[in-house]
Length: 356
Image 1 (cartoon, one colour):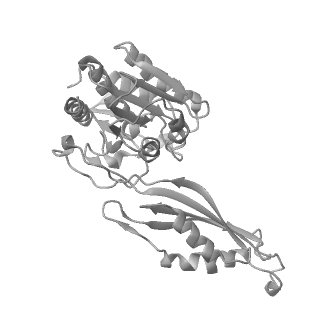
Image 2: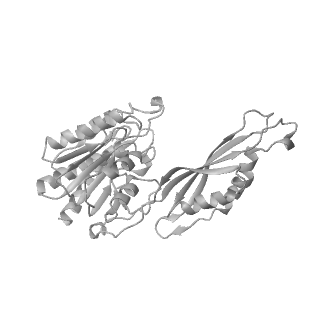
């Protein structure tokens, strides 16, 4: 491989570690494995923290110019019987490394580790941040960001799987819960009650096709999706309560949509709006010259730690750029093509040289 250090054994070990979201101790142990691997091969400044959402920062100096940011959690593998191999095998075969997280995003961690070792050997300035529970709402980065003892890096790289093409942003993800309060009555006399499900349907669901979407030249358009709806206890009772949750992907602030929903709810107090999740978009920043020879994949469809980290480091440029096929993300028999890992390491080395 192009790296001075072969990180494939490390990647295999990381995949073998079950770090499904919601397991802070397992995620902390994986971060410690990475820190140990690095410190056995170089001298790095180490900072860590977090209890519910552990984080670890390793850097060549106190003010890294380039910061790689990777989450260590993975989504559940689902039914293991559907996999050709143990989901946490980490087996290397047929030019690929196999297992849950190989692409999303332990392969990215391995490439970033190789980049950090290269930076240390060459006297370049770089750091690696490992976060927890990204897959369930960017929780770890949100918790870690205020505690990070860093000035703004020039560049933050999010090594999510992008087929080694780069992306300059993604839309935000916002969940709004609308709760309806009706009045129960016997279903034989529905006129004596107020149907909470019907309130949701008339005031909210029927108006979704009037969603006031905005458009951004890079990120695309705002979208809205009705994700869940529930209510009622029995067919013979007019339901006194019901709720739905909307997933709105935003190219800007989510506040206009919260205001829109409040207007739809009316002023009789029957419907209320609650923000369940509010993750900002990552908007494009100044493109680096080193990326000119690479392909812009356009905006990513998913949300990354990059949006939260850019709020913490507003002067930093952020790019999503890493090894692995997008089609392998969260898939059964997830695996990473090792030539993609090698290419990512070469890309990162080229970038570090250009910035130092």
